[in-house]
Amino acid sequence: MRPRIGILGGMGPAATILLQQRILDAVPVKGDSDHIPLLIDMNPQVPSRIDYLIHHEGRNPGPVLAEMAKGLEARGADALVMPCNTAHHFASYIEDATSVPFLNMVELSAAELAKHAPKRGRVGVLASPATETVGLFHSAFQAAGLTASYPENSAQMLHAIEDIKANGPSEQNISVVQATMENLCRDGVDAFLVGCSEFSLVARELTSSVPIIDALDVLTDAIRQFHRPALNKTPS
Amino acid sequence: MRPRIGILGGMGPAATILLQQRILDAVPVKGDSDHIPLLIDMNPQVPSRIDYLIHHEGRNPGPVLAEMAKGLEARGADALVMPCNTAHHFASYIEDATSVPFLNMVELSAAELAKHAPKRGRVGVLASPATETVGLFHSAFQAAGLTASYPENSAQMLHAIEDIKANGPSEQNISVVQATMENLCRDGVDAFLVGCSEFSLVARELTSSVPIIDALDVLTDAIRQFHRPALNKTPS
Image (tube, rainbow over all chains, first blue to last red; front, side, top):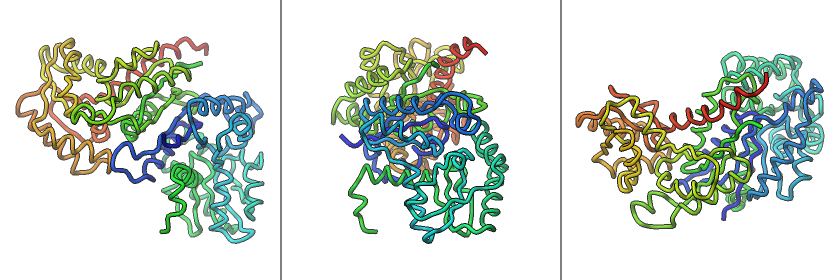
């Protein structure tokens, strides 16, 4: 039996679909059976992470994520992933509830960024303002020798996320993110992290003179490597 | 708790992603929580339906589908669906193993076609040759007062399916399907059924003077309708 990846999804659903598509695109196949098996709990009713962390409203999403993780493990998931950066604030609920590896997108992204930014480099974080409020990337960035720069227009970025969740990607929300990147570049950043899976939905449209690392790509690569350890060792 | 839809997926994975995207697009939302919750077993290692039915090779997919269905029910699925037409030959394995409704894409499609074709109308079936071999659509079409017309170039159609599974949609495989439709039209058909979920991946590119009913659209609509009654009861 091939290793199966359990996905805690639905935060939002479009990003969960995007992760599946990127996994599909990452694996060369001759037919169905070469693809990576996935178990997906697409639960759009996980309590809002942003409401809980920014507005101190609604239920704690942690226990719901723990239940989802336990269910995926019980069904045979050999590793767990969660294509929502902000929800990683509650990663300990998942890790405490299960015994299979949790491929932590935040830690993996910090390690990847360290390859692209100089020591003590500054990373422009394109993410929900909740990630700054709770210092989501702080310890992972510190461990990787990086510092975070956050956008000043946090309300506008939050609105763009909510607009993508409700209406999908648009020229308007892409231009908000692009303008934010240009402001951060003027302040001096060495790389960007696309650290919100709604922004991953528009990441291919973004351009910059510094490297842009999309957390969802980093996660996709970790899934591919978990599934086929041999690929790690494959020389280019 | 909203009704959850269990998806027996991975046959192939791209079609399972397409179904999720169509469900997403079918539901107007203000945010994540308005979306339909899904449990997806994306199992690309289900034994090949085509190998088993056409070439009499490999294992019977039925018991594997029964296990997947049981697992989805155990995790809380309130209804089951399977975005692979050919696999519906094994629907009884799923129905016998579970007690929740199975939204049968073949039966639902026949009922939908009956609205678009005249009594005793002829339906051009764009599907894997295995569906003709086993008479997959026969009883559902008979119940709906329809007859099936199958393409003469069955080997070419099978190759197109395998090519879409391995390499994704292309101009070449779209033109194979389009030319097949024109041949069937010359023989006189009253409607088309896109009865293979790989062809659903290219269905939006196909044109005809007669109605084209995509089984995956019919299934999407059935999922929306199954989910909606609960929404009506939700206190505002």
